[in-house]
Length: 397
Image 1 (tube, rainbow, N blue to C red):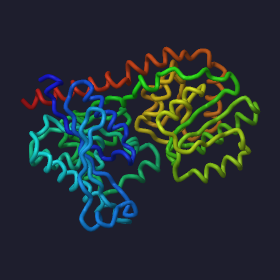
Image 2 (tube, rainbow, N blue to C red):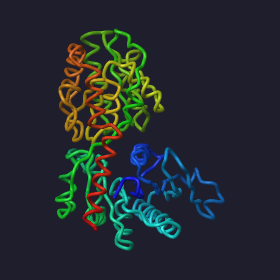
Image 3 (cartoon, rainbow, N blue to C red):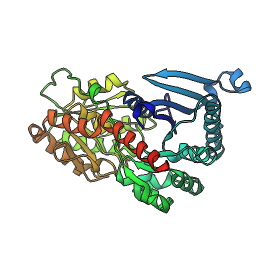
Image 4 (cartoon, rainbow, N blue to C red):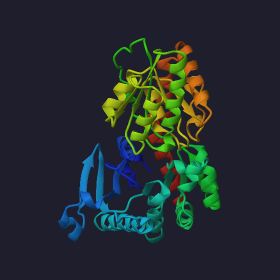
C-alpha cells in the first residue's frame, strides 16, 4: 500500500472555529505527504448564533476544501445545562455525517480520531457497524490526571463510553507518555496498544526570521487561554519577584484571552505591575509569531498539560522555553532548549526566569530550531502516522 492510495477520514472532537486548528493542520500534513484526507466534524455552536430558520429546519451540512483536504461539517446547537444529551447528540450527528459520506463514496482505509471525548465514541460505533479500523489520538490535558482540577474534569458516567472507545481502536496514540497511566486505568486492555507520537509544528512558518530583538529589557512572552489551568497567576507572582529585585530589567507580554482576563488584570494591578506587564488579548497566528520573534524567551507554568504545542511553536522560533512539570512539557524540554521548574511555585519560577536571562548566551537559537524541526516538524510527524496506518492495515489484511 502506498501513501498515494491511502484514504483517511478524520473525526476531530472539536474543530475550527471552536479551536482545533491543530487538527486541520495535522490533516493537511497527511495530505501533503500524499494521502487523500476528508475531515468530518460536528461543530458546537450557541443558540444565539443560529438563524431562526436553521433552528426550525436544522443546520445544513457544509463542504469545504482547505489546504488539500476536504472538510464536511455541520453545526450542532447546544442545549444549555444538559451536558450528556449534548454529547450524545454530537456523537449521533458525527455518525450521520459518516453514514451520509459512505452512501456517496468508497469507505476509507482508516479513520483518524482526535480525542476519545467524544470522537472516539463515535468511531467505535462506526467500526462496529462498518468494520472500518481507527487510530485514536488522545490530546486532552485532563488525562494527565495529576491535579485536583484535572480530576474534576472527569465524570463517572464517562468511563464506560471511553473504555469502549479505547478498546475499539487499533492503536491508541498519546501526545506524551504522561496520558497513558489514566487511559490504562480506564481501559486496561488498551495498554498494549498505546504508543506516543508528539504534536507537530509548522517550522517553516514559525522559523522565519523576524526583526532583530532589542537587547533591553529582557522580554518573556507567554501565550495561553486565560484559564486557571494555565497558571498565569503564578507567572505574574513570579514576575513581581523579579521586578522587585531588579526593577526595569525584565518585561512580560501575555497573549490570549479567556475567563480569567479581568481577574488577572486585577492581580497585575495588585502586584504593582502596571506598565511592566502587557496583556495583548487574542492574537492571530501571524501576531503570535511576531511576539515570539520579538521576545528573548517563552514561559508558561501550566498546572497540567498533555503536551503544549505553544512550547514547540516558541522553540521553532528559536526561543528557549520555561515550563512547570505538568505532564507533557518535561517529556521534550531539555537543558538545550529550556528549563523545567516546580509546579505551583512562584519562587522557583522566578529563579528559572532569572537563570535563563543570566545564561541566555548558552541557548543557541539555531540548535533549538533544528531540534524542533527534526522531532516535531510537520513532515516528520506525518510520516510517523502514515507508517502507523500502514502497520494497522497490514495486520488487518
